[in-house]
Length: 337
Image (cartoon, rainbow, N blue to C red; front, side, top):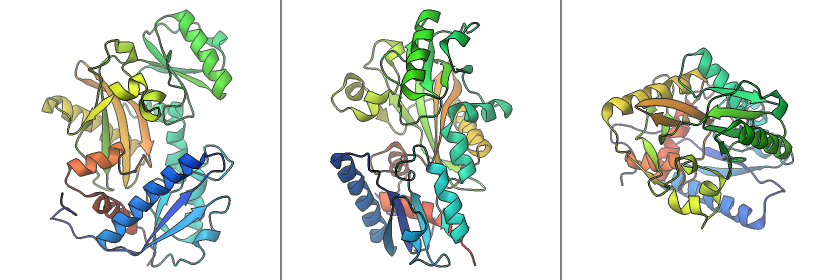
């Protein structure tokens, strides 16, 4: 594995990894997060970057008070403020007020992509393919929906929260029951979306101005016979030993006809630009009969060493540290003079 792309030279900016620990996390979750943090820091140090860590609890500005915005670039790995759910978008305004260049999305993009219905509205307006959808605040509102199978999700959650057994429904009765369950459990709105029976791909993209897609990453459902269970649900991501975890594997680079691959990349690039992603992002999609449909747009996606984005950079020939260094260099173009 090469440490950097041979055609590139990266500046070894002093980097500050901004991260958070939430008081609701278990000790095991804290230890796991610390392991990922140390792996990122070690990777950057091996590349030659000076690296500092800054922990956010409730105050974003205080941990950064000892750093100079003219010298340091922030790797924004902070998922929010302790005790405030879905507060990703509260971090960038503070970093901008302090004058720091930081990796990843602005507050606008984080807010737009946090809510799936809002993101899909933008995709529809830009004629970027996404499955037919609607939102409901009560099962009693469901009168004219007639597209099945359908999948029901909380509109404002990520990480497959709410996508569990029964998320894919095949008739109106099941749909109303599932919408009621989602509303009772998560509040907000229930997003109902046509379930595309087909292959699933993640498209990692990085860069600005002329962003570039990384090798396509496919979720292989061949070990799951029922097409309505061929979905990356909560168990598939987080519950080791579960049926979907053990039977949902990945392949990168994906094996796919180039004509279809180009359609996938084109749709993903359109979404990346439409929702103004910066530096890096991941677009999730399903493909049916050669036609891609975007099902999720992930700004500041999982960047851990064993996550999908890092696997695609590895397939492109980057070590983990070299990939993180490249993202920091993207952000550094926004440094104050």
